[in-house]
Amino acid sequence: MTPSNPLNALNFSGGPGALPDSVLQQVQEAIRAVPEVGLSILGISHRSDWFAAVVAELEDNIRRLMGLPADYRVLFLQGGATQQFTMLPMSLLAGRSEPADYLHTGYWSGKALPEARKVGPVRVVWSGEAGGFGRLPADGELDFNPRAPYLHYVSNETVEGLQFHRLIGRDDVPRICDMSSDFLSAPGDYTRFAMIYAHAQKNIGPAGVTVVILRDTLLADAPADLPAFLDYRAQIAAHSILNTPPVFAIYVVLLVTRWLLGEIGGLAAMERVNTAKAALLYRALDDSDGFYAGHAAPADRSKMNVAFKLPTPELEATFIAAARAAGFSGLGGHRSIGGIRASIYNGLTFGAVEKLVDFMDGFRRQAPRP
Ligand code: PMP
Image (tube, rainbow, N blue to C red):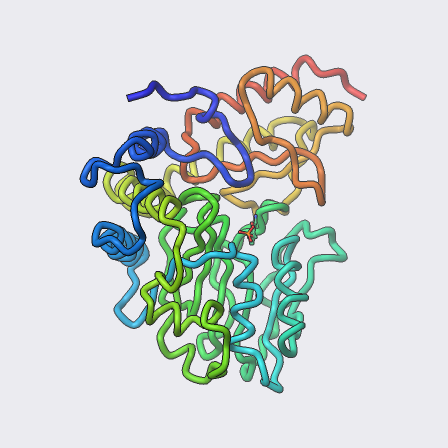
């Protein structure tokens, strides 16, 4: 097998992001030939029995990892998380007079809002915009509508590095969550969600596939005349193979779920690693005398994306260049807020975070003070 590329191990990109080395090695092999088929993964028909088994095993792995009962459907769709911003209201909001509840906690929840508004009425329950999306709301700030068709929120704001560490919403209103950037990173009470969606390119694979998990009953009143591609019911009936699906991306996600179950040992074990990585990195921020200034309020700090600033934009540019020269990549902050962002998804090891923290300590000690 081809030796690993050491630069992959230090890829702190916000997404597509780092994948486990053992998965990347199997992917290389599969490009040549999937062991049990003898053909390249890039040339295997989506109508083959082998691919049907891939989809079935992947669905089963996700059910096992998340503890999902039989009344949940698991779909593998295209169009990214962005397509869900539209597909969801088309099924659950069109023609409704009562507005859906939406939280506006950062860049990505903000992208879902205008798309929903094109389809039906929306009420913003809480917005962090005036506060520069530096924190998440406390329970006392959230006044949910018991008649709302659903509540939509983003569990982890990828850009700002804000993560809900508790469940919000009411159990009598369908709770719908974009978990794109913290999917399968920790165990949770997932049956309290009516729908969860997450694209693959952060924690579980390459771009091209989005996992959608939804409870059967959610679609009871969906309009009958939706385009089939955008109708969850048609996708369910076709077992995610309504048209040619992204065979390669789905296969890589399968390999990642096998890694989670077999090598890591499930989501509780994954969470322990993710918590340790985040604690190490936030400690480097907290012990830096303000040199590395974290963006998120400490209570809402994300275990997936650590966004911070240096004293000046010039120092940030020097930091990124020096980090690149030392083998790190993907550390530039999102274009909407600038600064630095270290994304520490499932595939990134504790050892990689140790290396980054060492680099940050060294950089801080030799940096000129403004
Ligand atoms: N939601 C979240 C939380 C994201 O982080 C992103 C992209 N980074 C999106 C939605 C949009 O995803 P996509 O590019 O797959 O449409």
